[in-house]
Image: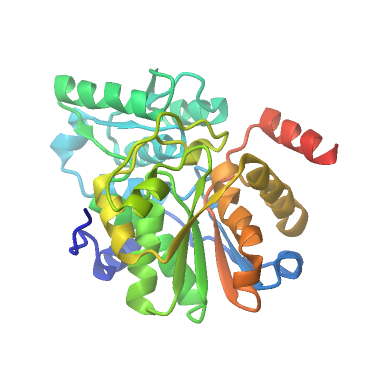
Length: 326
């Protein structure tokens, strides 16, 4: 069951903003007239795809690795990821001179694998999915003495990604609804912490893929749950587990969690291309997919959509465009 005490608060996010601002620019929050017309609400899109790694996770990586001791950095850090957390840790490790080892599943997005290696990390491919890669990483951390950076159960990581939502609230303090994707839950948990502290009336809605609903099912049941598979093409949403730290925050603070289909995510990718001229990966388009699903509920409201990443392969983009044009 969820606990009432959050390991992260708004002050932690403000501190993270000071740290991160030395290394990353604020990302644009753009009003889209075309998307607003389609959705029937005042739509703002937060363009995290413009960050150096093409995704929001780098905020957390920088905040966490900036806090490590010189000994921890030299000993090395290790993480498991389908891609964006991998790039985050690799980028931050390069920034601060730390050794980084990343475990990624076999068949991981090749764009993200190349980028992670390009930032200087050692990438090891293990298992069929994120959770099997994570099991290898956890064992390797124990064996080698690396600092394990979990993709969700890390207060400094949550505070770091919370700066995304702090920027939204600072720029549009009267926003009515935040819609955020949920994989491991760090971003959604951070959105709740920031939004509810600054304006308790803001609704925070999380989104999962129908084919990877572990957090949704856990939230519905009120206890941690795992699923047998996580077969969504949106790798940023593809986990079979809900994680304790972020789950507790979501249970206490999130207003709703919705599921979207693979087709709805693909349609949202195309809609974002057409209306904002921005490329979103599957997880990055999930917020927009949910907004289309919730159009009646969102009508005439001011809505912020987190485009959390744009690391979509050209092959996948072509397949989506071909499918949508038939």
